[in-house]
Length: 296
Image 1 (cartoon, rainbow, N blue to C red):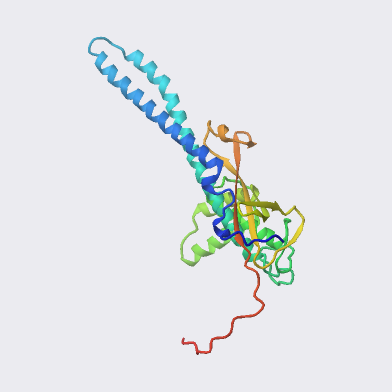
Image 2 (cartoon, rainbow, N blue to C red):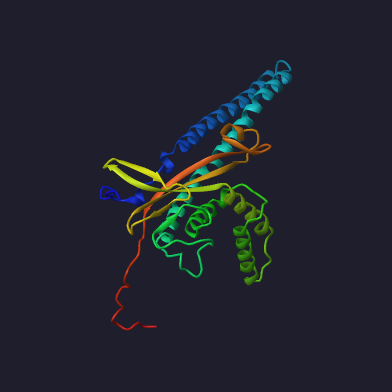
């Protein structure tokens, strides 16, 4: 293991943080251009209407004004749609960064556990000994980290009708919650929530990395290969990258940001973020029992 003494605060060292990501600055730049285009378009329409009123005193120029308005309106609508998609993408980028934090927080809590001998695994599948991590789907620690990531992304995810076990568990829990309050379960529980969780689980991936100190100014990140087993020490740093295929839902302009297509007229862009925290490790002994009697 490398010497990690040069790293003072892993919780403040955000890998590809939100404000340092290229996507954030791209969205901000496009948003500024769209706002400028909308302002100029509205100003042009206002000036045309004013000129039409003045010219109407001498001659009828309504046909010319209509043609000018028809030329400006598509530009205005395009700018509005592009600004809408840019705002949604920036919000999705922010959620992906939060999902990276949630996944890393889950990693430093689950990795120290001994899930190999646990009677009830956090998610299911096979378990690992304490501080041992297997980078493979079906391993309880890997699945728990992945689940933390895609559940955090459910509010901004697209919609998929394919049924997943996680979405079924969530809708069942919400059904019980509303039933316990004596209320009828809303339709959005079985439709919107389930479909968003299905999409997020199918389009979210994680990478667990090992930070390695090169010098006081440089930190390298080594990905644990898929299927490999790695043993963390109790206070080792843990980095988790989250990659999410953000669904671009605004028509006509979604192709501008698109990486690839889900299918016919359905496009997405891969958004990624990472976060680093310190492994919680294990305590060999329990803290001493308080000598003073506890008061009820």
